[in-house]
Amino acid sequence: MVRIVVFDSGLGSLSVIKSIQKQMKCNIIYFADSKHFPYGKKSINELRKITSKSISSLQTYFMPEVIVVASNTLSLTLNSHSKNIHTVLPPLNEAKKLSKSKSIAILATESIVKSKLLDNYIKNFQLNNFKIIKINASPLIELVEDGNFYSNPNYCKNKIKKILSTILLENNVDVATMSSTHLPFLLKFFKQIFPQIIFLDPNEALSKKLKKEYDNKNIKRNTMKIFTSGDIESLQIKLSQLKIKTRVFKYTLS
View 1: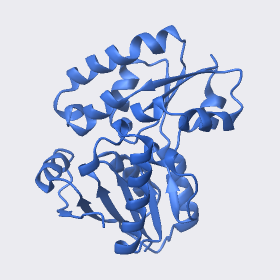
View 2: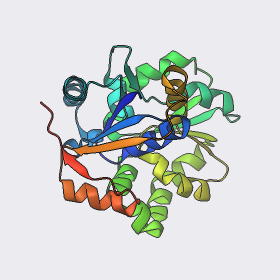
View 3: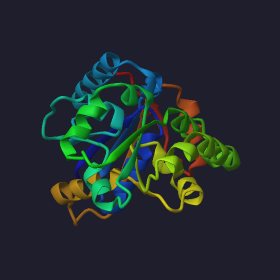
Protein backbone atom coordinates (compact mmCIF):
# COMPACT_ATOMS: atom_id res chain seq x y z
CA MET A 1 0.00 0.00 0.00
CA VAL A 2 1.41 3.37 -1.00
CA ARG A 3 2.22 5.67 1.93
CA ILE A 4 1.33 9.32 1.34
CA VAL A 5 2.23 12.15 3.71
CA VAL A 6 -0.13 15.12 3.39
CA PHE A 7 0.69 18.33 5.26
CA ASP A 8 -0.63 21.84 5.68
CA SER A 9 -1.03 24.31 8.54
CA GLY A 10 -4.18 22.62 9.83
CA LEU A 11 -7.52 21.39 8.51
CA GLY A 12 -6.69 22.23 4.89
CA SER A 13 -5.06 18.84 4.43
CA LEU A 14 -8.38 17.12 5.02
CA SER A 15 -9.89 18.45 1.79
CA VAL A 16 -6.93 16.96 -0.10
CA ILE A 17 -7.12 13.68 1.81
CA LYS A 18 -10.85 13.36 1.12
CA SER A 19 -10.22 13.85 -2.58
CA ILE A 20 -7.38 11.28 -2.65
CA GLN A 21 -9.41 8.69 -0.74
CA LYS A 22 -12.25 9.01 -3.24
CA GLN A 23 -9.87 8.03 -6.02
CA MET A 24 -7.77 5.29 -4.42
CA LYS A 25 -6.98 3.21 -1.34
CA CYS A 26 -3.79 4.20 0.45
CA ASN A 27 -2.02 4.77 3.76
CA ILE A 28 -2.28 8.46 4.68
CA ILE A 29 -0.04 10.24 7.16
CA TYR A 30 -1.77 13.55 7.91
CA PHE A 31 0.48 16.18 9.48
CA ALA A 32 -1.29 19.33 10.68
CA ASP A 33 1.43 21.93 11.19
CA SER A 34 -0.77 23.95 13.54
CA LYS A 35 2.24 25.50 15.24
CA HIS A 36 2.87 27.57 12.10
CA PHE A 37 -0.77 28.50 11.35
CA PRO A 38 -1.50 30.68 9.49
CA TYR A 39 0.95 30.21 6.61
CA GLY A 40 -0.80 32.98 4.72
CA LYS A 41 0.47 35.83 6.90
CA LYS A 42 4.13 34.84 6.89
CA SER A 43 6.86 36.25 4.66
CA ILE A 44 7.95 34.32 1.57
CA ASN A 45 11.36 33.65 3.16
CA GLU A 46 9.67 32.18 6.25
CA LEU A 47 7.43 30.05 4.07
CA ARG A 48 10.35 28.69 2.06
CA LYS A 49 12.10 27.68 5.29
CA ILE A 50 8.95 25.95 6.57
CA THR A 51 8.49 24.10 3.26
CA SER A 52 12.09 22.90 3.11
CA LYS A 53 12.20 21.83 6.76
CA SER A 54 8.83 20.09 6.59
CA ILE A 55 9.65 18.05 3.50
CA SER A 56 13.05 17.01 4.83
CA SER A 57 11.75 16.06 8.28
CA LEU A 58 8.67 14.19 7.06
CA GLN A 59 10.68 12.34 4.41
CA THR A 60 13.25 11.18 6.96
CA TYR A 61 10.83 10.18 9.72
CA PHE A 62 7.94 8.59 7.78
CA MET A 63 9.78 7.46 4.62
CA PRO A 64 6.71 7.88 2.37
CA GLU A 65 6.57 7.14 -1.33
CA VAL A 66 4.72 10.44 -1.79
CA ILE A 67 4.62 13.80 0.00
CA VAL A 68 1.75 16.15 -0.82
CA VAL A 69 2.34 19.81 -0.02
CA ALA A 70 -1.34 20.43 0.70
CA SER A 71 -1.03 24.19 0.63
CA ASN A 72 -1.22 26.44 -2.42
CA THR A 73 0.82 28.95 -0.43
CA LEU A 74 3.73 26.60 0.23
CA SER A 75 3.43 25.01 -3.20
CA LEU A 76 4.01 28.37 -4.89
CA THR A 77 7.23 28.86 -2.89
CA LEU A 78 8.80 25.67 -4.26
CA ASN A 79 11.22 26.49 -7.06
CA SER A 80 11.96 22.83 -7.75
CA HIS A 81 11.32 19.50 -6.07
CA SER A 82 11.87 15.77 -6.45
CA LYS A 83 9.45 13.55 -8.35
CA ASN A 84 7.75 12.19 -5.22
CA ILE A 85 6.78 15.69 -4.02
CA HIS A 86 3.35 16.75 -5.28
CA THR A 87 1.98 20.27 -5.02
CA VAL A 88 -1.45 21.90 -5.10
CA LEU A 89 -1.64 24.94 -7.39
CA PRO A 90 -4.36 27.22 -8.83
CA PRO A 91 -6.01 25.34 -11.76
CA LEU A 92 -5.74 28.20 -14.25
CA ASN A 93 -5.85 26.06 -17.39
CA GLU A 94 -9.25 24.73 -16.35
CA ALA A 95 -10.41 28.22 -15.33
CA LYS A 96 -9.33 29.58 -18.71
CA LYS A 97 -11.39 26.95 -20.55
CA LEU A 98 -14.51 27.49 -18.44
CA SER A 99 -14.66 31.28 -18.23
CA LYS A 100 -17.02 32.95 -20.69
CA SER A 101 -16.69 36.45 -19.22
CA LYS A 102 -12.88 36.19 -19.31
CA SER A 103 -12.82 37.36 -15.71
CA ILE A 104 -11.24 34.90 -13.25
CA ALA A 105 -10.75 35.29 -9.50
CA ILE A 106 -7.98 33.60 -7.54
CA LEU A 107 -8.79 33.21 -3.84
CA ALA A 108 -5.43 32.87 -2.10
CA THR A 109 -3.66 33.72 1.15
CA GLU A 110 -2.55 37.23 2.01
CA SER A 111 1.17 36.55 1.61
CA ILE A 112 0.71 35.00 -1.85
CA VAL A 113 -1.62 37.75 -3.09
CA LYS A 114 0.92 40.37 -2.05
CA SER A 115 3.94 38.54 -3.49
CA LYS A 116 5.26 38.25 -7.03
CA LEU A 117 5.06 34.45 -6.85
CA LEU A 118 1.44 34.39 -7.97
CA ASP A 119 2.10 36.93 -10.74
CA ASN A 120 4.94 34.78 -12.04
CA TYR A 121 2.75 31.67 -11.91
CA ILE A 122 -0.06 33.42 -13.83
CA LYS A 123 2.37 34.32 -16.65
CA ASN A 124 2.64 30.62 -17.56
CA PHE A 125 -0.96 30.43 -18.81
CA GLN A 126 -1.27 32.98 -21.67
CA LEU A 127 -4.04 34.95 -19.97
CA ASN A 128 -3.39 38.29 -21.66
CA ASN A 129 -7.01 38.65 -22.76
CA PHE A 130 -8.34 37.75 -19.33
CA LYS A 131 -8.93 39.85 -16.25
CA ILE A 132 -7.35 38.13 -13.23
CA ILE A 133 -8.56 39.30 -9.83
CA LYS A 134 -6.38 38.26 -6.90
CA ILE A 135 -8.34 38.16 -3.63
CA ASN A 136 -6.95 37.88 -0.10
CA ALA A 137 -8.87 34.90 1.30
CA SER A 138 -6.98 34.63 4.61
CA PRO A 139 -10.05 35.78 6.64
CA LEU A 140 -12.08 32.99 4.98
CA ILE A 141 -9.39 30.43 5.77
CA GLU A 142 -9.66 31.42 9.43
CA LEU A 143 -13.40 30.60 9.31
CA VAL A 144 -12.40 27.02 8.56
CA GLU A 145 -9.56 26.68 11.04
CA ASP A 146 -11.68 28.26 13.81
CA GLY A 147 -14.48 25.80 13.14
CA ASN A 148 -17.08 28.43 12.23
CA PHE A 149 -17.90 26.63 8.98
CA TYR A 150 -19.70 23.92 10.98
CA SER A 151 -20.60 25.77 14.21
CA ASN A 152 -21.80 29.12 12.86
CA PRO A 153 -22.93 28.90 9.21
CA ASN A 154 -24.82 32.22 9.24
CA TYR A 155 -21.72 34.05 10.44
CA CYS A 156 -19.75 32.37 7.65
CA LYS A 157 -22.25 33.42 4.99
CA ASN A 158 -22.22 37.03 6.16
CA LYS A 159 -18.42 37.09 6.23
CA ILE A 160 -18.18 35.60 2.74
CA LYS A 161 -20.69 38.11 1.37
CA LYS A 162 -18.84 41.02 2.97
CA ILE A 163 -15.44 39.96 1.58
CA LEU A 164 -16.41 38.64 -1.87
CA SER A 165 -19.71 40.07 -3.13
CA THR A 166 -18.61 43.47 -4.37
CA ILE A 167 -15.33 42.42 -5.97
CA LEU A 168 -16.76 39.34 -7.70
CA LEU A 169 -19.91 40.99 -9.02
CA GLU A 170 -18.35 44.29 -10.10
CA ASN A 171 -15.69 42.41 -12.09
CA ASN A 172 -18.20 40.04 -13.70
CA VAL A 173 -16.27 37.01 -12.43
CA ASP A 174 -17.70 33.69 -13.64
CA VAL A 175 -14.90 31.34 -12.48
CA ALA A 176 -12.96 31.41 -9.20
CA THR A 177 -10.16 29.12 -8.06
CA MET A 178 -10.14 28.02 -4.42
CA SER A 179 -6.40 28.44 -4.09
CA SER A 180 -6.18 27.37 -0.48
CA THR A 181 -6.95 23.82 0.58
CA HIS A 182 -9.07 25.20 3.44
CA LEU A 183 -11.56 26.81 1.06
CA PRO A 184 -13.34 23.65 -0.23
CA PHE A 185 -14.89 23.43 3.25
CA LEU A 186 -16.76 26.63 2.35
CA LEU A 187 -17.84 25.47 -1.11
CA LYS A 188 -21.47 24.91 -0.13
CA PHE A 189 -21.66 28.55 1.04
CA PHE A 190 -19.96 29.82 -2.12
CA LYS A 191 -22.51 27.95 -4.28
CA GLN A 192 -25.46 29.27 -2.28
CA ILE A 193 -24.30 32.89 -2.38
CA PHE A 194 -22.85 32.94 -5.92
CA PRO A 195 -24.74 30.31 -7.97
CA GLN A 196 -23.61 31.96 -11.21
CA ILE A 197 -19.91 31.42 -10.45
CA ILE A 198 -17.94 28.18 -10.89
CA PHE A 199 -15.58 27.54 -7.96
CA LEU A 200 -12.70 25.23 -8.92
CA ASP A 201 -11.10 22.80 -6.48
CA PRO A 202 -7.43 22.06 -7.39
CA ASN A 203 -7.50 18.88 -5.30
CA GLU A 204 -9.32 16.94 -8.01
CA ALA A 205 -6.49 17.11 -10.56
CA LEU A 206 -3.94 16.08 -7.92
CA SER A 207 -5.93 13.07 -6.69
CA LYS A 208 -6.50 11.81 -10.26
CA LYS A 209 -2.77 12.12 -10.96
CA LEU A 210 -1.91 10.13 -7.82
CA LYS A 211 -4.42 7.43 -8.76
CA LYS A 212 -2.85 7.09 -12.18
CA GLU A 213 0.65 6.71 -10.72
CA TYR A 214 0.09 4.78 -7.49
CA ASP A 215 -3.31 3.04 -7.40
CA ASN A 216 -3.25 -0.63 -6.38
CA LYS A 217 -6.64 -2.26 -6.96
CA ASN A 218 -5.74 -5.12 -4.62
CA ILE A 219 -5.86 -2.76 -1.63
CA LYS A 220 -9.39 -2.71 -0.19
CA ARG A 221 -9.36 -0.03 2.52
CA ASN A 222 -7.86 3.32 3.45
CA THR A 223 -5.81 3.90 6.60
CA MET A 224 -4.82 7.18 8.24
CA LYS A 225 -2.59 8.35 11.09
CA ILE A 226 -2.75 11.94 12.31
CA PHE A 227 0.03 14.10 13.76
CA THR A 228 0.22 17.75 14.75
CA SER A 229 2.96 20.21 15.69
CA GLY A 230 0.42 22.17 17.75
CA ASP A 231 -2.03 21.39 20.54
CA ILE A 232 -3.27 17.79 20.33
CA GLU A 233 -6.52 18.36 22.24
CA SER A 234 -7.50 21.36 20.11
CA LEU A 235 -7.07 19.43 16.85
CA GLN A 236 -8.83 16.37 18.30
CA ILE A 237 -11.89 18.50 19.13
CA LYS A 238 -12.00 19.98 15.62
CA LEU A 239 -11.69 16.54 14.06
CA SER A 240 -14.44 15.10 16.27
CA GLN A 241 -16.78 17.82 15.00
CA LEU A 242 -16.04 16.49 11.52
CA LYS A 243 -16.78 12.95 12.74
CA ILE A 244 -13.13 11.91 12.59
CA LYS A 245 -12.30 9.89 15.70
CA THR A 246 -8.72 8.94 14.78
CA ARG A 247 -6.29 9.61 17.63
CA VAL A 248 -3.91 12.55 17.18
CA PHE A 249 -0.19 12.29 18.01
CA LYS A 250 2.45 14.95 18.55
CA TYR A 251 5.14 15.47 15.92
CA THR A 252 7.81 18.14 16.05
CA LEU A 253 9.68 19.03 12.88
CA SER A 254 13.33 18.14 13.31
